[in-house]
Length: 232
Image 1 (cartoon, rainbow, N blue to C red):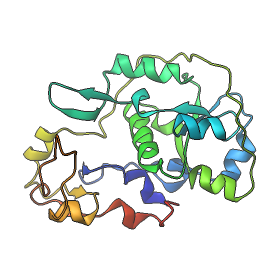
Image 2 (image 1 turned 120 degrees about the vertical axis):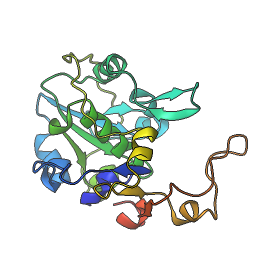
Image 3 (image 1 turned 60 degrees about the vertical axis):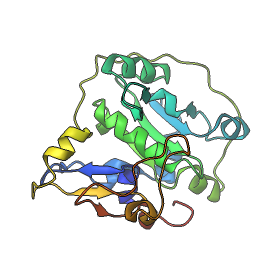
Image 4 (image 1 turned 90 degrees about the vertical axis):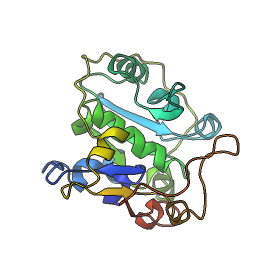
């Protein structure tokens, strides 16, 4: 399960030694047992990646609904989606989810929300909140499989208070990748399914198809190869 944290990335360039000693399984993930023991902690914030309908039907008690729009923006000028908001915009969005400087954050997800959940974890890390953020191992699927409680109660809206974000740099742009393609200290990983990597399939939509194939020199490790068929 450790590698699940990284599987939402289409391209990731990491210099040697970039992972700190603190970036261990224990700091990236929490178990369902841990969450059950800490569910009523006053500083705990559980963010649930789910559709509105799924969240309304049932969720981990006290969990707050999080959506992609809460932590990403579209850059219409560049034709890009899933871009990071500016630090001030991101701070406002995270405060709107109830996050404060003392929050202990756990990100959970429904059966099809793992990739967005890992994206949120990475975004929180970029915002300087990574040391207080963990992914729930197995998400709500694992939680329910163990017969742990769920309900449909929506917690009272809470607006958090965060200090100005101290952004770190776990995300790089296209210019950075291009500049380091030949650098032996960097490895470019394409985490898409093999069909997209080989060019047998083209992503995007009919109106706006992606460029077929992959970045020169990138290695393919499909995210689906790092999880079970039910993404646990």
